[in-house]
Length: 107
Image (tube, rainbow, N blue to C red; front, side, top):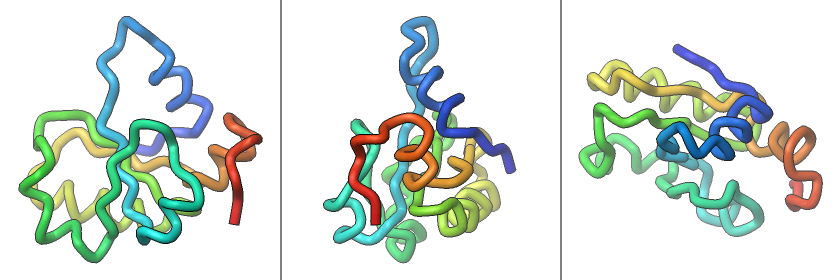
Protein backbone atom coordinates (compact mmCIF):
# COMPACT_ATOMS: atom_id res chain seq x y z
CA UNK A 1 0.00 0.00 0.00
CA UNK A 2 1.25 3.43 -0.90
CA UNK A 3 1.52 6.11 1.76
CA UNK A 4 1.68 9.88 1.46
CA UNK A 5 2.74 12.43 4.04
CA UNK A 6 0.53 15.40 4.84
CA UNK A 7 3.12 17.77 3.34
CA UNK A 8 3.25 15.75 0.12
CA UNK A 9 -0.55 15.72 -0.05
CA UNK A 10 -0.74 19.48 0.48
CA UNK A 11 1.76 20.00 -2.35
CA UNK A 12 -0.30 17.72 -4.60
CA UNK A 13 -3.56 19.53 -3.80
CA UNK A 14 -1.92 22.89 -4.51
CA UNK A 15 -0.44 21.77 -7.85
CA UNK A 16 -2.69 22.97 -10.67
CA UNK A 17 -0.89 20.63 -13.09
CA UNK A 18 -2.11 17.51 -11.26
CA UNK A 19 -5.62 16.11 -11.01
CA UNK A 20 -6.79 16.15 -7.41
CA UNK A 21 -7.38 12.80 -5.76
CA UNK A 22 -10.57 11.83 -4.02
CA UNK A 23 -10.02 12.52 -0.32
CA UNK A 24 -11.90 9.73 1.45
CA UNK A 25 -12.33 10.42 5.17
CA UNK A 26 -13.29 7.19 6.96
CA UNK A 27 -13.73 8.59 10.48
CA UNK A 28 -17.03 8.68 12.33
CA UNK A 29 -19.43 11.57 11.58
CA UNK A 30 -18.71 13.29 14.92
CA UNK A 31 -14.99 13.25 14.14
CA UNK A 32 -15.53 14.64 10.66
CA UNK A 33 -17.69 17.45 12.09
CA UNK A 34 -14.87 18.44 14.46
CA UNK A 35 -12.30 18.80 11.71
CA UNK A 36 -11.59 17.62 8.19
CA UNK A 37 -9.49 18.41 5.17
CA UNK A 38 -11.38 20.71 2.84
CA UNK A 39 -12.92 18.88 -0.08
CA UNK A 40 -12.89 15.47 1.56
CA UNK A 41 -15.78 13.02 1.28
CA UNK A 42 -16.92 11.30 4.46
CA UNK A 43 -17.78 7.60 4.44
CA UNK A 44 -17.32 6.02 7.89
CA UNK A 45 -15.07 2.96 7.92
CA UNK A 46 -17.91 0.59 8.73
CA UNK A 47 -19.92 1.81 5.74
CA UNK A 48 -17.15 1.50 3.15
CA UNK A 49 -17.91 -2.11 2.12
CA UNK A 50 -21.54 -1.26 1.38
CA UNK A 51 -20.71 2.07 -0.28
CA UNK A 52 -17.52 1.25 -2.21
CA UNK A 53 -19.63 1.22 -5.39
CA UNK A 54 -19.84 5.04 -4.97
CA UNK A 55 -16.08 5.26 -5.57
CA UNK A 56 -14.29 5.27 -8.92
CA UNK A 57 -11.85 2.31 -9.07
CA UNK A 58 -9.53 4.11 -11.51
CA UNK A 59 -9.32 7.40 -9.60
CA UNK A 60 -6.54 8.14 -7.15
CA UNK A 61 -8.00 7.90 -3.66
CA UNK A 62 -6.28 9.20 -0.53
CA UNK A 63 -7.81 7.54 2.53
CA UNK A 64 -7.85 9.62 5.73
CA UNK A 65 -8.55 8.97 9.41
CA UNK A 66 -7.36 10.38 12.73
CA UNK A 67 -3.87 8.86 12.93
CA UNK A 68 -3.61 6.58 9.89
CA UNK A 69 -4.62 3.18 11.27
CA UNK A 70 -8.23 2.93 10.15
CA UNK A 71 -7.39 4.50 6.82
CA UNK A 72 -4.66 1.89 6.24
CA UNK A 73 -7.21 -0.88 6.86
CA UNK A 74 -9.69 0.71 4.45
CA UNK A 75 -6.95 1.24 1.85
CA UNK A 76 -6.02 -2.45 2.04
CA UNK A 77 -9.70 -3.41 1.73
CA UNK A 78 -10.14 -1.21 -1.36
CA UNK A 79 -7.01 -2.65 -2.94
CA UNK A 80 -8.43 -6.16 -2.43
CA UNK A 81 -11.61 -4.97 -4.16
CA UNK A 82 -9.64 -3.95 -7.25
CA UNK A 83 -9.01 -0.28 -6.58
CA UNK A 84 -5.56 0.29 -8.04
CA UNK A 85 -4.69 3.83 -6.96
CA UNK A 86 -5.27 3.88 -3.21
CA UNK A 87 -2.99 5.87 -0.93
CA UNK A 88 -3.01 6.09 2.88
CA UNK A 89 -2.47 9.49 4.54
CA UNK A 90 0.32 8.75 7.01
CA UNK A 91 -0.47 10.26 10.40
CA UNK A 92 -4.02 11.21 9.42
CA UNK A 93 -5.66 14.52 10.24
CA UNK A 94 -3.61 14.77 13.44
CA UNK A 95 -0.41 14.96 11.39
CA UNK A 96 -2.11 17.22 8.82
CA UNK A 97 -2.93 19.66 11.64
CA UNK A 98 0.62 19.47 12.99
CA UNK A 99 2.42 19.86 9.64
CA UNK A 100 0.07 21.64 7.24
CA UNK A 101 -2.85 23.38 8.95
CA UNK A 102 -2.09 24.39 12.53
CA UNK A 103 -5.45 26.19 12.76
CA UNK A 104 -7.31 22.90 12.30
CA UNK A 105 -9.03 21.82 15.53
CA UNK A 106 -7.48 18.73 17.09
CA UNK A 107 -8.93 16.06 19.34
